[in-house]
Each structure stands twice: as C-alpha cells, then as structure tokens.
Length: 214
Image (cartoon, rainbow, N blue to C red; front, side):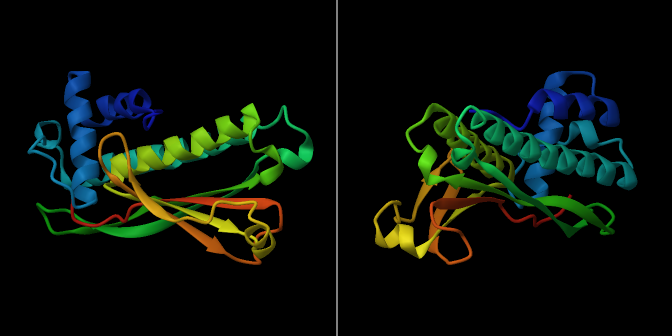
C-alpha cells in the first residue's frame, strides 16, 4: 500500500519542528494528525513541546497540505495508468475538493481556520474493466482510501452508477464496510444517479472528518 508520502512529509516536519531524528518527526506527524481527528496519539508530543502556538498551527497546516498533494498525485497516477487504453476507456480526473476547518489549540484555546482535504473524484469507464490499466487505477483509488483512513481514523468511497448500467447488471451495486491494513474503517457506498453517464462509474474518495484539537 502507498502511504501518505511519509518521507516527504517527515522531511518537511524535520525542518519546521526542529526534530533531530526521523523517528521523532514521525511521532510528531502521527500525533498532530491524531489530535486533529480526535484519535489518541499515545502522548508522542516531544517534538512539538518547545514550539509556540503559531508554529504548532503551521506544522499542522504543512501536514494538511501534504495530504492534499498526496491525493492529487494519487489521482494523477490513476489517470496515467489508463493512458495505454483506448480513449473511451481512460480514467478522467474530477475535482480534488478542500474544506476549511476550525482547529483549536489545546494549550492556548486559540483557533485557526485551516485548509484540509475533503475528497477526490475519478470517473472510471466500464469498458476498461479487466484491463491492466484499469486495475492499476483502481489500486490507486483503494490505496488512497487506505491512506486517508489511516491518517484520519476513517474514510469513505462513494461509487455513483448510472441507472441503465444498474438495470443491465453491468455494475456491482453492493455497499459495505471494510478496513485499512492498519484496521481503520472504510465505508463503501453505491449510489444510483443520472448525474453519471452510462458506461461510467464515478469514484469519490472522502477523507474522515477533522475534529478535536491540536
């Protein structure tokens, strides 16, 4: 499974936190994400202990920006994987949406409005099913969902399908729940809608909610 580009994120944190080791920065990364999503961080805050409240917000924003970039790169890889297929079978990139969330510093109780990843959308033509490029693109979608679930504590995949494809039984309509390799929940929801053209499934990978405090 592809991770969040951990080495890139940690390298950034080594700079902004002044961490001496990769392990120390990794713990800081995990703890920042954990606190922002309401997960337990196991008390690993040593790398942030000497940082002022403004610096703490800046560190967290760095992590969020890297998460957004990771999502964009996963989407781009999925599209690239289908380029050897005929044009009508190639994946089409949709939106990468972001939302702004208020985060409270647990030390000062001050708040900062922060830009975070919301969701990534990709259209997958049914004609590509069974082909290597399609399979590779689907792997990117699944890997991204796993990564976001591990980062945020949960994630979801919405699969939108055209009624004609559902009626013709060209698509799997079963919703369900699964878990990332680290055991975090991922909800898979199938939705019938005319907003998606026949012959296409629209996949939207949504990151778990940001809540809690820094």
